[in-house]
Image (cartoon, rainbow, N blue to C red; front, side, top):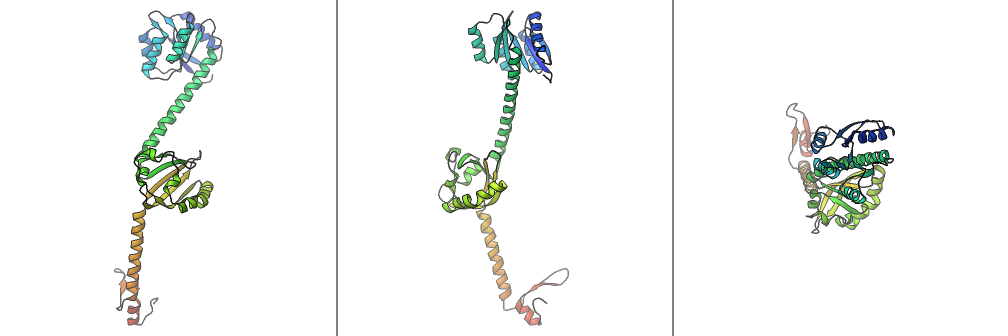
Length: 299
């Protein structure tokens, strides 16, 4: 194997340790190794060095593989633990496997030791990658839970996940109220039809869509939802949403106020103008003001 491994042997016999080492060397393993034969030395090695594989004899004077396995568990290190013995019975072997050993072999037949080591190294690598992915996922979920905007994850028609902000946006308290439910429950029929006929085709094409929708809360009240949809590689739909009803009302009121002010300005029976305080130039003037001076509005 290309990369150098670190193998820890729990063995009281130097001859047996060298026998295991030779077996692995002949199978093209590139590794450094150490041998321990007491609980204290095992604890020291686990605390001070990193190891890829542990190969343990079952019986040692004052020490044994079950005790070594317990020490490994207490260290919370995920290291493949392979038992070899010349005397282990089937019952003891089964108990070791139940306790967490990854394999066991007889010393007089180590033919499959190299493959057992390769297999357990692969499995350990898979476990490490899975653990890293789970840690990353937990961090992402923590960030999602802390988000101000509502975030939901949908697969097909069904909610897989909704953060607290998303639940509260629609008037729900518990995630179970939305999980495994259809997203269609949150929209009137005409909006569902618009999503299916207009939005989803664009989403399939562009992988993202941003817009607005009329949504329904749990109590039946409606609100205008600002919505951002992203189609992930695994066809999960990531939905980020917020209530923009107040913003829409404020904008509409502002537009109405501006329109009213323009109408008053234009229709006033007295001359009104607006000038730049720095240059003294006219910015605008109403019709009555222009007529008083004999100019057109353009002039």
